[in-house]
Every structure is written in structure tokens, then in C-alpha cells.
Length: 122
Image (tube, rainbow, N blue to C red):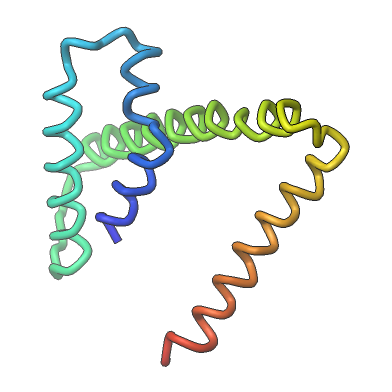
């Protein structure tokens, strides 16, 4: 799961865009190390039966970091999704943008349903 997520944010180019927007080019090694450590730690917490009894203050900070991450991820996805209108203008399919987005959406839905009903045995 963690590897798939890292592949997802890598393919979308979120980290380079984040570095570009925040003008933190010197911290590329920090970004890379943070992603790897976060991936390993998240994978460990997913599979281990760990119960961390933390005070509310630390849980609030943890939640704040999660909120910041999710907000930045949503902003990066918004930046990346601007590709579709540009692409449709370049290949002169402005009137078909809705059809293109619906095809992508329904393809994801049907692909997920197919995977869960055929390949995932509960």
C-alpha cells in the first residue's frame, strides 16, 4: 500500500512541484529521506499491532501534520489535473472534455469493481 502511494505521488510529479512552489531546492535530500522514512514507518504501523498511548497534545500535532499533508496533496492534484483542459485545447477536443473526464472516472470505477469482484476473494 505504501509503495503504491509513493508511486502515485511520484508519477504525478507532486514532490518536484512541491519543491518548485516552496522554493526549497536545497532540501531535496530531506524530501527524499522523509518519503522513505514515512513509507517504512507507515508500512510498519499498518502491519504491526501497535497501540501508542499519547497525550491529546501530541495527537493534535499529529493530526495537524496529517491535515497539512492532505491539503498539500489536494493542491498538488489540482495542479496536475489542469493538464486535461490544456490537453483538450491542444488536440482541439474542447467540447469533449466532459466525455474524457467521465470516461476516466467510469473506467476507474468499473476497473475497481472488476478487481474486487473477480480477483479479491473475501
